[in-house]
Image (cartoon, rainbow, N blue to C red; front, top):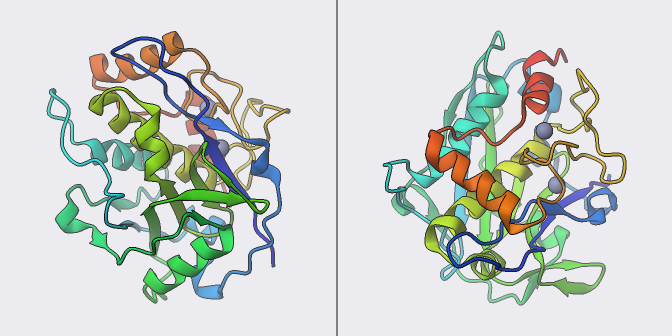
Length: 275
Ligand SMILES: [Zn+2]
Ligand SMILES: [Zn+2]
């Protein structure tokens, strides 16, 4: 059994002091085949996610030193509510709108022992998730695992210091490389948004967009970067290039209080999907 790994790379350089780079650059590695074997218990049933699941429970674990950003914007928006809102948005208007539960404080997340690994292969990420995952045998519950790790993603035998996050296709597993997140942004606020956007982007892949399990209602697949959206204002765009665009992307969210990072076409796909 083989699975693809979706990768976001941090490709940006700080250009302005306040708003700085944001990732959402996914690599061609998205379509690579990692060949990782996954236990049946760690499968994500995509049609089930859109037909039987009533509860989406996100578990966040972190290695010491790789803690997620916790807290709120000056407008009082808790950072982790961004991820929660974006999951909700995907299912809005469906006959089942699952209850989404995302931890928002470190006390609701789980600290794991440090692995002291300089890097992680896709297989090691899946193994780690296997040790964390509970045994949920209820088709109404989907557990998703977001793991904050020290070290880099190990791709094709080499460490890649530009990958900020990966998701393992066909599983509920997301890994975030905290050291890379920390190098991407000049300010705490922007880094917090970058972190949330990375998690949202990887969740989008697990949820079957773009055109990777959930069919498109209207064409918006980037033919050169499969599984990604042609809309450069969408979190599923393979790369949001340029500090101006990025600062707009972030600033728009801050100004409007709108936390939804997916474009309408991506949302239309998941909201209309009939498994
Ligand atoms: Zn991607
Ligand atoms: Zn989109």
